[in-house]
Amino acid sequence: MPRDGAVPQRLVTGSTLEDAGFDKCVTPRGIEKILSTAQELVPKLANAEIVELWCGLRPDTPDHLPLLGPAGVDGLTIATGHYRNGILLTPITAKLVREWIVEKQVSMDWEIFDPLRFAGGGNIADGGDSLADDQASGNPAGSEFAHK
Ligand SMILES: Cc1cc2nc3c(=O)[nH]c(=O)nc-3n(C[C@H](O)[C@H](O)[C@H](O)COP(=O)(O)OP(=O)(O)OC[C@H]3O[C@@H](n4cnc5c(N)ncnc54)[C@H](O)[C@@H]3O)c2cc1C
Image (cartoon, rainbow, N blue to C red; front, side, top):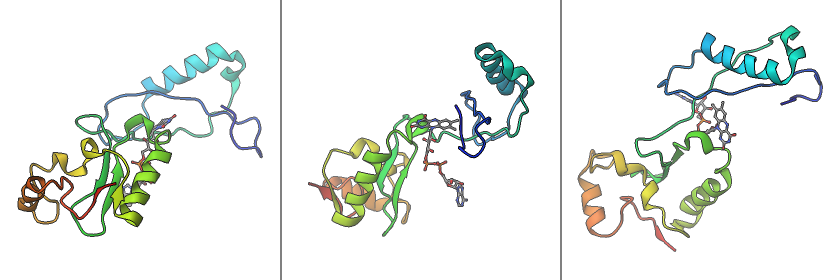
């Protein structure tokens, strides 16, 4: 994809996808895959200068759903774990985060995204007992937040 109006000849090509933990190394295998496909599509790229190589992370979760909502610590709201769709999901994520922070309640079901679902029955702040209490009282986030 052409990028940067000031340097019209510059192209960005990508990408690969692998389970690499937190390792952000650019690998020969990844480079080869991207460059061979790019040259197949645009043969003249065989003579192009490689200006930059880059690698990023796609934050994933054990159930492949994002972590969204209050984290059980006063003033801490989490929005991450969007894997390969974080850009695409920006509008709905921003809407939910705004509702949590500004309105203290959200306009849709969000429990499946509860950031505490992997906390082992615990509240991040106190190590756990309060989440069970909150769930018993119908407040799965362990906070004052509620549905609209
Ligand atoms: C190659 C590639 C292509 C993608 N293409 C798409 C696409 O087409 N469409 C789409 O919807 N999504 C795409 N994604 C996924 C999208 O980029 C992610 O889902 C999104 O960026 C995740 O947002 P995030 O805020 O959770 O994490 P990030 O965007 O990773 O943000 C985390 C931030 O925290 C900072 N940080 C980390 N550790 C610390 C620390 N200790 N202290 C301070 N700051 C720290 C990092 O520098 C970073 O700025 C792509 C991802 C990659 C890698």
